[in-house]
Length: 78
Image (cartoon, rainbow, N blue to C red; front, side):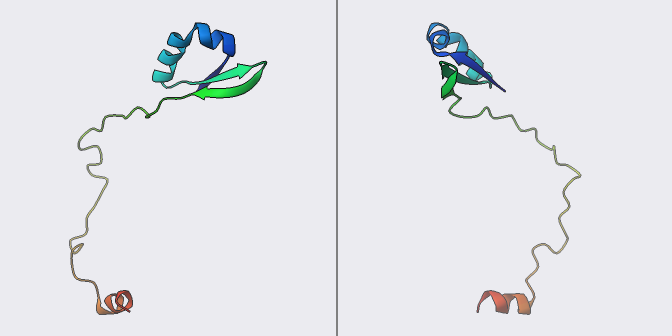
């Protein structure tokens, strides 16, 4: 989501605009109706991962660590 503000409004409400940027809103600053700058967070907010969220969705084959067949190994070591 983004909002556009005029340059004079940006100067007088910088603190409020920075709060919005921190909340994830991109702020576009316009001069005479033409955008010329954009305030965005340096790092995107990282969502916390929950352990076990992929449980039951991933299946590992019994032979996942078995040696590769010779024909594939021969192709690799050409």
